[in-house]
Image (tube, rainbow, N blue to C red):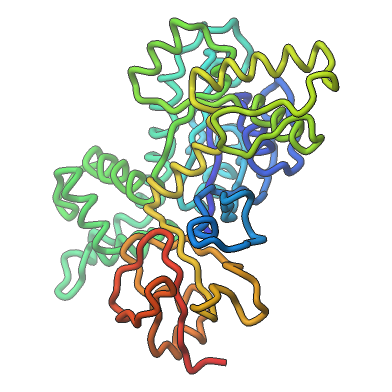
Length: 389
């Protein structure tokens, strides 16, 4: 399953974001290092379920909206020189190793300094925090490479040794291929074998971009001065109110409002059941949603998976005529697949044995066989025929 990491400095709202996205318990407080060890939970990305289009009754979605699970890690806050072990740096960076993509949560209100200490709104520049995380991650990757560089450089002088393969093996934990090592070398404008320290740091910066794609989310936007928001909008930053999203999910669970995560607005079920404080709180959230098209939490998860990681949603079924599995459940499963994936890739995703025994696939909509080299599309419903039991 895909894993997303919530990263950022202390006290920027990561744990609130995590709790809102997962409804899992996470300690929340206005002081640095509330999160000492990482929180692990399950969130969901939203997509349109094919059931409505096909006129089917599906029990796996909400009124035509499908939610596909992803792992989410809320890691310890990052402070300057984390790559040297300062603060909880080593623990933080090790947690990031597990992530496929990163949601970098920054305090868009500018009310916390680089250490996470409270300030007046607008007193700190959130753009400083963006550069800071990228630098810490770059230096962390450089530290890994530097430990092995002397040996790699000697091996590069011998016949039959390929530097790109050797570096890829050093970065096994990051899942980087020799081809991506070559891409990073080209992007950095260096020759790996003959570069200097600054060249290697530039190379590591490109490795971070490749191995850990990132979306920056300006959280606490509902508390940000308007002039600061206007400036941040020019930086193409995404925005969120994690506290607003958490309030909406709790209100929805209490049946006070009608709200599906990712909706641009909510609907109050019974005005008379709300206290004046609840009405005031919901009005403030509604104003933020109107300005930004929602609370931004679900939108950030969707962007990380569908845009940064280039995923589509595919539905495997056992009966292409009734779009169901062997138990008669309509569209019971939804898999996040890399764009360009084939039916054979889907078979392996369902189960290794099914992939090994793959014979052919059927497009459930057309009832036609498709080649094992056929490129799957978002929303495809596919029957896999395999000799595996």
